[in-house]
Image (cartoon, rainbow, N blue to C red; front, side, top):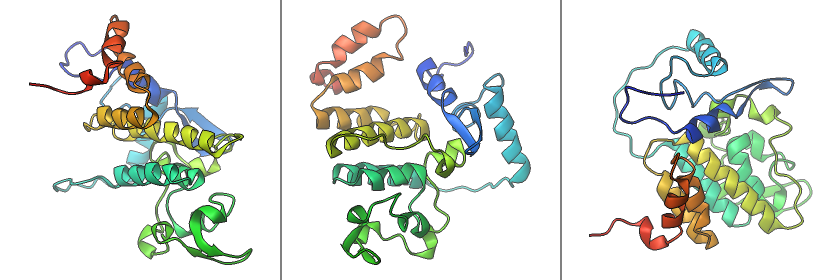
Length: 240
């Protein structure tokens, strides 16, 4: 897709990322596409027919809400930051639940979603006391859904959207962190935090290629020059 009349437009890499997601109606009915792409994060009259069809379906069944407010911090961003933190605290299943199920009492009560040792400070086989930062029992959280569900439907029904089996917890943590950074791209695109998100993960892993590869991928024609420049962390910052 091209945007000949736009000074600023989404990269092909970004559009492909939304288009290659899977939207779940249920475990047996899916179509390609993420609602947060065409007509969500950018406008396209010729974008994915699947996305446009879903978008129009939900427009029919929802009422438009018009309001004005100063946005301080988006709720979805806050939950993704929470997921990133608890994942690195050694709780990858809790972090993944943010993406797939949402932080609500019903999801957190299921041990196959979040195992007991990741959510309880004290527990037995039948009871447990939630760690304070895992207590989402307040009614205000009852309608929470997984962040990935915001664009991809009923992800709690998706049997293939899971943490694969790994031999070590560290591998699980790295896998979930990759899913979180991908979700940040899908959810917070064009909001000004992508480069800093990539910097944070690259520095944490002591791996500048994590940032360099992802930034360079969107620069068609001079990918290698961009990558080479960004492999030097000194080039990540604006200087006088």
